[in-house]
Length: 113
Image (tube, rainbow, N blue to C red; front, top):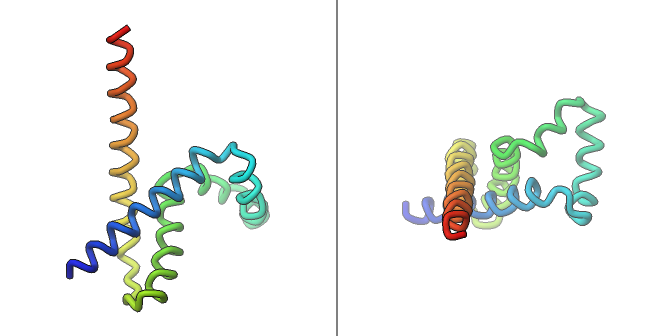
């Protein structure tokens, strides 16, 4: 049972890291070069699908689904689709706490000036 929670934590942290790179660094040349074919394909399917690359929770769901499939094959875990909802919740919690921490540090720095 503890392995499952460790698995979810690893899946959540890796999803948070990948989503942060893809959204925050999306203007970077390397990330933009990597995402361009996917954005082009999604735009051909439906022009609204490009919104996936700007939505933190949407992208977290799909990244966690892909990572969960890969990890379940490699480590012989049973694929359980409900994992993505837990992972999206934890990713949202990590992202919110990061924003709150940044705002707190910025306010503290402004007060010291």
